[in-house]
Structures are given as structure tokens and as C-alpha cells.
Image (cartoon, rainbow, N blue to C red; front, side):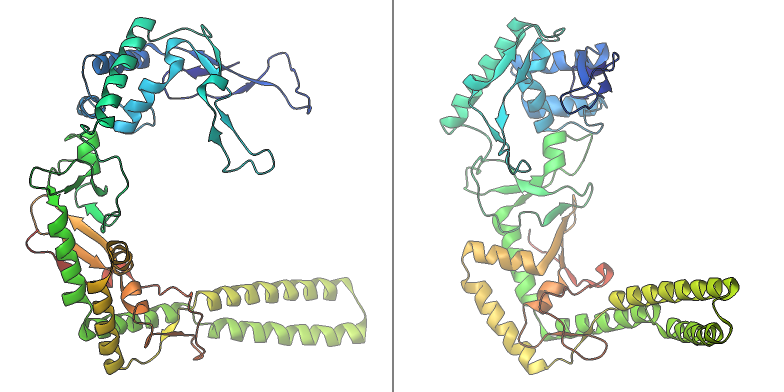
Length: 406
């Protein structure tokens, strides 16, 4: 019988020891729950600290500072603490029938059922959290929920189309910078490192706060004034051409073409011998080996052809300049949502260090495809490629610029 720990570590399922089968003839598998003392202590601590006015964030920070490993084997964040506090398994309950699926579709159709439809079995296994502590936590959660619903919460729970969402990266740990707090008294919002905010100083030491309005204005200025320029576009295209020449050298098929022609001559000679002498075993085996060799060479040739990078057609500087003017006007007059889409297309990431100016790394694919009036990809034979083809631009050659005044 399988054992599942009562913390969120899970367990493995094993076959029924008596060899029982289900209605489809498959071995019956069981899961049981067993308390792991050292992990159970962490669970009780989380419940006790939260009931005593500890926050999700404060608890996560403390666990990380003590190097306590989370159920997922990594560091603790707000959601991991919250999941522990909502898990009724710790009070000895087993709950079924919490969700429903579309029986015909199954995948991706799971939806929650009303709580009154749940099936709950009390005392199903040993408890970690007693009823008094569980109820104390529920009472505290109720108070916090009312606080948030009345507009006093410290977090912005509504959706907002922030222009740089997903683009701001912590230069220390690589996590996203996001807006997690309410507006300041002056009406400003701040981006901050998600790992530093949710997991604490022990996980990431980048405590920098970046004003939303300042970094967004600086990013728009960098794209429009520093990156969308004829010279930058021409440099990008030239870097791409140099890189593609290096890649094309590794995908050349001349050696394979020569080897295929040689094998085909051997096959032609063997065919003549078979006609003259008949299908002797030696000739048949040799023919089979040659045919297999030709098939392998042709497969390798197709693979190289498929990996062959595209080439860029010649560009017209005047058309580039006109296209940039059009794009800049679009960026200036765009709605917030449209401006967000343009930034997402033209910026790869913005790296934010603790002290230095943030570094905006552009997305040449966006810079070039946005100027579709002049830019097109062609195959090595000069045939225009489909518009859906993606420009495989190397990361080390992406134009970048520092954001001043952030």
C-alpha cells in the first residue's frame, strides 16, 4: 500500500498486495497517508504563526532564511504557504468530488464544484493540525478577506495591462519584476523583484523599487529614440548576415551530394550485375547495404536543408526611414494596450540590477518585422519565405541601451 506524506510532498501508488483487479482488469492501486514528524512540525508552525497575525509573506521569508526546503524541493513563496493553510488533509479529512470534467473532452475541462457537493470523510487518517488551531486560522482568513473586500488590502488584486509586464527581469536572480503593492500616497506604483518580495532577502538580495511611470517612459524613449533608427536597423541586418554565413557553412550539403552520387553509381553497377548474373546472395546483400546507405545520406541532406538559415533581401534606407516614422507615430498615439503590444514585440527584456541603470535589450525580430514594408526573408535560392517565418537572431547581437533617470 502506498504512503503519502501529510505535508505537500505527495507519495507513490503501489499495487494491492492481494492482487485485486479493477473492472477493466487492471491492478488496484492504493494511497495512504502517513505523518512525517519533521515535516509535520513545519506545517504546525505555519498554522500557528498565521493564526498569531503572521502573513503569508512573513512566514515564507522566515522559512527561507532558515533554509527550510519547500514541498516542491525549492524555496518558499506566498502561494506555497497559502496552499498549506487551505489543505484539509492536515486536520485528518479526505475530500472527494471537488471538481468536474467534460467526460467527452477530459483534458482542460476541470471546473470546481460548489462546496455543498463535496464528499468529506472526517478522521480518515492521523491529524497534524487540531480543530482549535484550524478554526483559528479560518477566523483570521475571514478577517483578512473582509479587509481586502473593503479596499484596505496591500495588494492590487485586479488585472491591469502594465506595459512592461513579463519584460522586467531581476539582474540578480532572474525573476520577474512585477507590481505587487498598492499605490503610494503620491499616486505612484512600483515594480519590485518577485523573489525578493515573496521569498525574502535570503533568496534574492535585490530590494530595488522602480517607479512604474519612470521606467515605462524611459523604455518608450529608448525604443523610439535609440533603437528605431536607420543606422541601428542596418547594423542589425549586417550582424544577421554575418551570423547566417557562419551557419550556412555548417549546413552545406556538397559533401553529402558527392557521397550520394557515389552510392548511386555503385547501385547502378550492382543492378547491371544482378541482371547479368542473377540474384546471388552476395549481390543482394551488397545492394541492400547500398540502398540503406543512400537513404541515410538523403535523410541527413534533408535535415541540413531544413536547418539552412534564411537570407535577408537588400534594404532600402529611405523605405526604412519612412517605416520608422510611421511606427513612431503609432507608438506615440497608441492606447495603453496597443502600446503594451508594441513594447512586447520590440523589447526582449529589461534587466534591473540593485544599483546601476536598467539595461533594455531589444528584440531585433520585432524591430525588423514591424517594418514589414521593406523587410522580407528569402531562401538561399532567392525565393521569398512565408511571412510566418521567424528571424533566428543570435542573443549576443541584440542591440541594448541603458535607461537613465529610472
